[in-house]
Image (cartoon, rainbow, N blue to C red):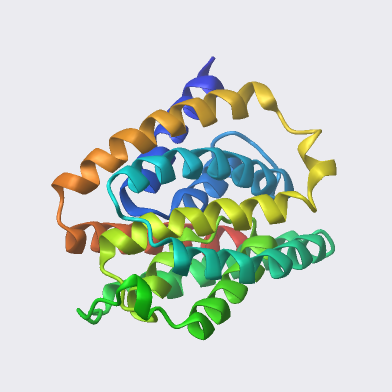
Length: 249
């Protein structure tokens, strides 16, 4: 019963973060699955992709209704990331778990630092998106998704804000499309692992994450984008520090 309560609580938090920030769900889901629910790192990364795929599709619907999804840029990101995500997902099975954990923590920390830096305020309209930049960033995000078992939103949001100069609300909404596609591509290479997962915990986790995503969208409408960005970055730094210490000790 205690483990089930932990799964429900963790799912709610992941959903709130994903719905409000458009990313960060998997970067929180992976350590929650490992340290709270007892999953192995390999099982946690696969379960995280399943959880984040379901939750991001729910949050994407809500952000689409609000007009915060830029489909042209999102499609370029997603299409460019499919093959790298699948290839990296297959390679991840042959790498040491400690190395993957350290890489996960390092990427999360770098992303957080980037998010804490002031971003440009210029806004790029849908017709002005540069396909080359979007495709290049999307390929890199896809590779990281497959390698580390994350949806990529905690990197997609900073990329959309800093590389393509999206405003925060558009970056959050568009990143959800990227997350869903990258996660599905990576899951295609992990089908064997998914069969052995503890679905009695993953099911409730997904259910509360979806509910949390809806409330997270409401939070995003009431709290300033700057505050959301700073909160996101601080959470990432804390998670990265914890995982790095655990991996090397």
